[in-house]
Image (cartoon, rainbow, N blue to C red; front, side, top):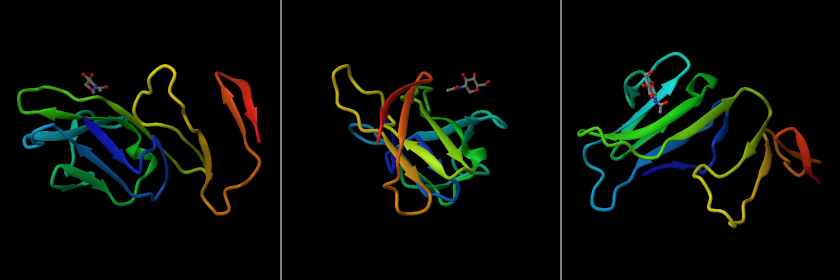
Length: 133
Ligand SMILES: *[C@@H]1O[C@H](CO)[C@@H](O)[C@H](O)[C@H]1NC(C)=O
């Protein structure tokens, strides 16, 4: 299982993000890989990220870190995949990283780069307004 901390699929440029490969017994032998628009299947430490045990830390994110991330075992078994987006903009939508089950409650948060974050916000789904605050 691949988990992301902080738990968000969108990040601001210069954010810190830690990705972890977790397994029930041990996470030994798992490699974190990613595809971005520029490179495919590169592993943590190979030009991006710093390996830290079963985690991989990205100290300062950049838009070029946007892409799909997954863990891969030596045997080629793959974990869930996670799409991360890093924006150079000033607003992000904080939404669950992992798929949610039907019927679950979900909290969506519009986050601004500069505090305070309690600004008016409108949420759209597939182009249609669903909620305004
Ligand atoms: C990553 O890129 C490789 C090479 O194009 C492709 O085969 C693979 O499906 C991609 N993986 C994901 C998770 O998108």
